[in-house]
Length: 78
Image (tube, rainbow, N blue to C red; front, top):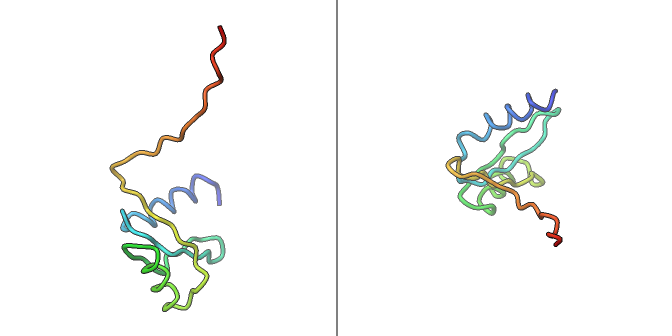
């Protein structure tokens, strides 16, 4: 699957989980939510109850904020 399609699919997948934690598993190259909650422990507990004790945990950020990575500028020389 091309990267853009996978990124779009992931964005669609997390749309209903704003400001939540989700537990994810990969099923044949497709990410699937197997648990969610207000914190990582809750999401992991739901995933384990659903039979996925090793699911990856991910915090879905607010969609009203932006992430701007810090970039180090080279030192100024005089």
